[in-house]
Length: 404
Ligand SMILES: [Zn+2]
Image (tube, rainbow, N blue to C red; front, side, top):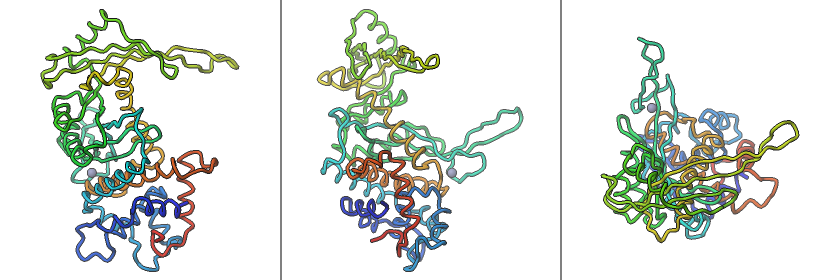
């Protein structure tokens, strides 16, 4: 399976041709950045989980180093410290365009939706680098205890079977998520002008700068409304008491939804916005007394703000706003639980970003491969496929990390 997915990466995405452009700033390197990238990709495709395990499989000759092109863990680390991130982003872009042209990725209910959110990595009380963000986590009085961590913002495209990962941007020391997301959104709008029409985010993204930036790129925005934006929130709640909602059912959920057009209620953004309030009810069956099922009602309330035009139906707007969860479920949760993304292969700002971009490259190809190429019903989960790829890598005897 390792060889199959590597060959697939090359056949459809030219992956190990594109990696030839990757550079780093080591002086007089003995092993090229392209070979190091090949090692990193093989390690990530096989989900080895650490550079030490890569070293071990190299040393026990499962992966033969006959051509002396397989780096040690420390060489990988040094190269990752200064690896050229722009080229990694270009590779991601090339994979996206191939996938889109070849219809390997699909819309979310007929629309291309971008999702943005932040994620934290490598929180530690001990391990730190010069670029770590720091917070005080003291519990006892008079005793200072610090915690070191890195955060980044990520941008993905929602899809019916998997989310497609487009880009990340670090949140640097002493700056907030919005500063990082502004750089990220500016870059994805420039690099992927036709990849999405609307961006969904949590309450933080109900922000004039975000809405205006996206609007300047002819994109719409949708964000959760929390009661901090009092004018909008109170107006939406008041109007919902005097206007009848639209009621519909979809996949066992009943929706009561209000749609209000409001203007001049929000200082940060001058356009008209739609405030959508949705009350959602579903019946859930769960175990009650032994041998018996019980049915209970679950109710959730949402309020969002969006500048999507009225031609986009209310039902579609609700679906777009809910797509926001994909970045939690199909990106952050999955990369941590299945792909060990919280493990820091090398602790430096550049290396952390480089490894996540490499992982995004691997995940996009892996998800497409799993969705389109695996016909064997025994391989029903991604985690099982990951195990098969890993098993073949560990028992293989390659002259190079990548069998080309
Ligand atoms: Zn650090």
